[in-house]
Image (cartoon, rainbow, N blue to C red; front, side, top):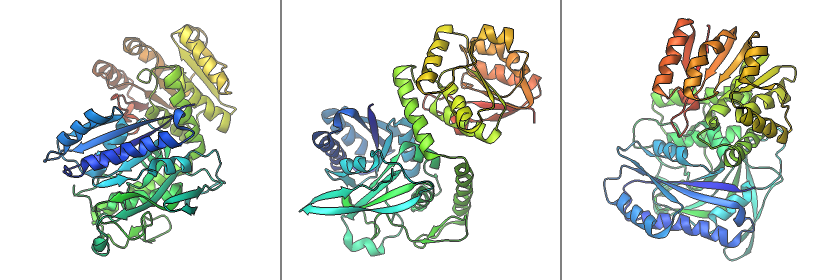
Amino acid sequence: MTFSFSVIVLIANCQDSVIRTLQSIEQSIQYFYQTSPMNAEVTAEVIVVNDASSDRTLEVATQWIQANSQRFVVVNHQTSLGLAAARNTGFKYAKGELIFFCDPNSFFSLPHVSACLLCLTQPNQPPAQQVGELTLDVKLIQENQYQIVVPPYALDAVQTGIRSGKASEIAEHTPNGHSLSNLCIKRECHEFLEGFLELPPLPENGQEVSAYHRWLRQFFLVGNLAVETVESADPISRSPGMIELVQTGQNAVAIPKSIAFESSNARIIEAHSQRLLQKAIGFNSQEYARLFKIYRTYVSTISLEDHAVSWEAARYLFQAVQAAQPKRILDLGSGYSSLIFRTYQAKFAPEITVVSVDDDAEWLGKTKTFLQANDLSSDRCITWEKFLSDYADQSYDFILYDMGNMYTRAENLTKIVDVMEPTGSLIIDDVHFPFYAMVVFEVIGNYRLRLQSLKRETLDKYGRYAVKATYS
């Protein structure tokens, strides 16, 4: 099975150093391909986000990329949104299963990519509830050559050592004391953290990075690799990857001593912390990672990604059914959504009923084969005609409506609302189509249902998102 990683690079008014940054990343990737036995199974991409540079940074970067590498993609902010927003933009374009970050004026060493991939691609399994951080043992073989002793735990992220090009200024530096350029994290973990908080003011003062590091160690297992594999031209903290914290309560946000939080930002961080704590109650990182790998296989071998249910929507559905605990699920669409619902059924509620429906008999056959290949039941995978004749007289307390073309969906929406339990939920996908959205609003209004936007939870890179309809 192939494996992929993405490097998200931020550039902003760094025309004098941007070529060195890009070169260091490309050279580190090439070094990995030249030295790693797993190189043939790994694909790499680099997402370069220009945050509205006012100098020649974008021009210089684009010229170098055009002349040197096809793996680089440039995304341009017309208006400066700040580093946190730029990182979030980069992630929207990234497809890799592992995510690297590289900030302006930072440079990868040759072995950086190789070291991180070695630490995060081991088949080991973590013990139950293993979170926090551990220091990875490193043995010096000879000058500048190290042997990394990978623990018997499957790490969620790894943070290497980083050296500063302005060591004399380290003690005086406080705003950006916690780097991301020496971090590599599994995609599903970054998605769980919901990216970076975009806190005012625009010039970052390190709050969003410190909070990110705190949550990363609160919910996942991070390996600290005490080898300097990244260089920063900007001053950094004396202990890269380590954060000095003051605990302010059992579930409170841990606040770095070196940062004076604005009260408004502190409230935002505290609210987000509580959201993550609630999410973590039903979150199983191993299961989440497994589902994501199946999804990448699904959209590369069975369905086109822009035709399949989005990963964002699938992730929401898996969380939503765990929270709702429905007894009868109606899966109108079939495909990867069927796997989500039947995984929930197999692992958490074998007594419930799941009915998967599609208006295309050939596609329904592919769904059955897909489910069986993943050791899941393919019972009650039926055509739309079969549903109307044998199942439409029953009611369902959790419904996904994602079947057929948009005109078919609009025509049959009332039939779907008619089979929803008064206490149930109806998830309607693809409301980004204006005419379909109008139909949805009209039908939902006629039934006096409450409509909730799920744009924040389900928006994907194609602009697709869903809404939720309930009676209360």
